[in-house]
Image (cartoon, rainbow, N blue to C red; front, top):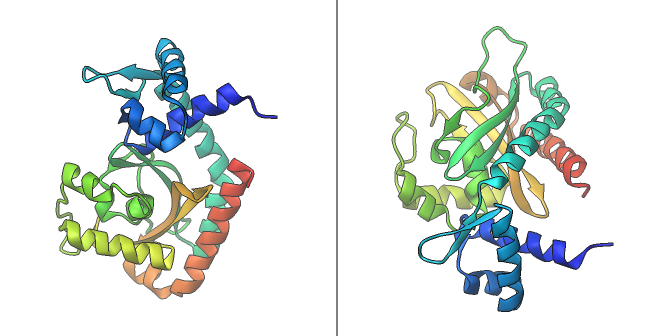
Length: 244
C-alpha cells in the first residue's frame, strides 16, 4: 500500500531531476499534475530537510542531502552489479563496465576486468564527457535535453574518430535509439572499441553496461550476438535492482 504524501514528494523530486535538477513551481505542476498548493507544501518539507534548495530566482533545485543518499545508493549498485559484469566478462572475454550520468558527465561506478593480459581499464570513479563514449551515448539517447548538454560541455576531439558537432551527435543518438545499443569505435581512445546498452528503470536509462577492449578483438565478436548478450545481462540486472 502506497502512502500518498510520500508518492507525491517522490514525484516532485523525480520531476526536478527530469528538468535538469531545477525548476519552478509551474513547471513541477505541469510535469506532475499536482495542484500548486500541494507542491508548495511538499517543497517546504523537502527544503527543511535539505532535499531541495531555493535559488535566488525563486526556482527550486535538488539539494545537498541527496548527495549523501546518492553516494550510498551508488556504492550499493556497484556491489550488486559485480556478478552481472562478471557474466559479461565470461561471455565476451573483455572488460565490463557500469556507468551512470552525474550532471553532464559520465561516471564509471563498477568494473570487472578481462582476464586477458592485454585489456582495457576505465578507472572506477573516472568522469568523462558523454559524447565520445558508448555508455554516454546510451545514457543521453532518450533524453530530450541532449543538445543542451552538448552545448554546455562542448564536443572536444579525443581522437580522429570523435564526433565533434551537435548535429552529428544527435544523428548518432538517433541510431542508438533505433538499434538499442551504442558503439564507441575509437572515439575516446585510439585502438579501443566499446559497446554499451542501457539498464532500464521503467523505460528510463538508469545506467549503462558495456564491454570494451582492443578494437580487433571487439570487432571479431559478432555484433548482434554481443548486443543480445549485453541486453540480456542488463535486463536481468535492472529487474534485480528495480523488481521489474
